[in-house]
Image 1: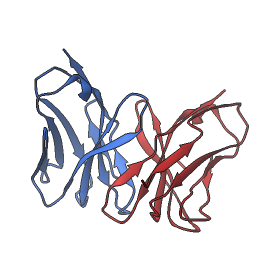
Image 2: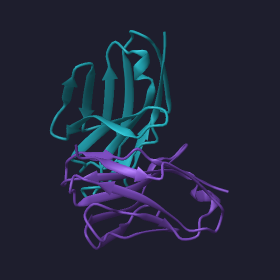
Image 3: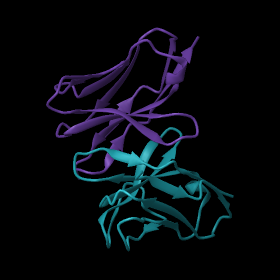
Image 4: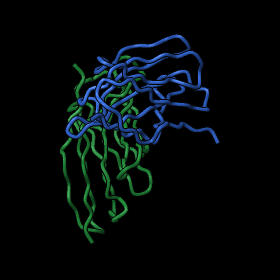
Amino acid sequence: GEDVEQSLFLSVREGDSSVINCTYTDSSSTYLYWYKQEPGAGLQLLTYIFSNMDMKQDQRLTVLLNKKDKHLSLRIADTQTGDSAIYFCAELGQAGTALIFGKGTTLSVSS
Amino acid sequence: DAEITQSPRHKIIETGRQVTLACHQTWNHNNMFWYRQDLGHGLRLIHYSYGVHDTNKGEVSDGYSVSRSNTEDLPLTLESAASSQTSVYFCATLRAHGETQYFGPGTRLLVL
């Protein structure tokens, strides 16, 4: 079945780079997403990547996709305390509309 | 601006009671979803709808029902609430296949 795995926790110092990793099982996934959830809030789309791309950069965010290994990563450059949140990796399910989410990675940024 | 809203934002109910969580969107999106978020499980799909009068079961649909009488609303009903349904519930919409899902702010439900 479809499954998305993420490490649960990451701690970094302000100014360092953060790398959040994700693996997925459905090789037919066409889109992969990164969402951010701040405490007490809903999910905010950070970025997404289409499966025919290897990399996508958007300001401080870099998404890398290794389709062969079904591995997705999100790199946040110059991490700030405001980046502290839970980050969810998600793949587009076989139905083509519903998302399959990982359990989320809690990013803690210390000053 | 177009948006997606959920109500109530917080709710406490007794076990066995019925409760309906509202989701309303003004984007005119056909596709709407309900997820629940629990510690250690991430977000799991409860029900979804591809359009008016269409509803489908997701991964964790037992104990929940939805109806879609118009494009804007997808209410989620717990017919007889159980403590296991204590969770944060998120509604989401999607315009078309492959596009981005947008999430509402969530409803925190506590079943005592």
